[in-house]
Image (cartoon, rainbow, N blue to C red; front, top):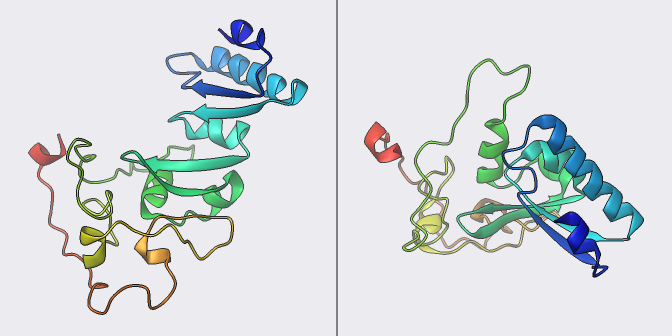
Length: 179
């Protein structure tokens, strides 16, 4: 597939889950090929993946999506070292490393995309959700230049109406609701 793509000499290549279901050796080979193509053909490469290791090794920039929306963007180094959106924070906390002692997971379940929740789509699972998160889609005006973040926690002071910054009481999720 990669060879067929190169016949038309594209300037932009989209690799959608290029390493899914591959063993680590073949995965490394595919990513090496894509990296070489990017360098040798002056090719812009968009990698769509759930594998944060691939992102860390192969990408310059990252866009983190939750329930169909981009919630955070930035340089890979910046997002991995200082995640600004609560979903990105929870996602990175859920990765496993050699120092992992216990598993971390994000409580709840992803929303129904046919009928997504009002406001921020992550608010039912967010540990920092406020009243405004339940009602109004967040602005993507993160206060860090070059780091758009779609979260009410990151908007300029005074942008949240009075009383809408009250935390949402979180209830314990039952096992049946998580499944």
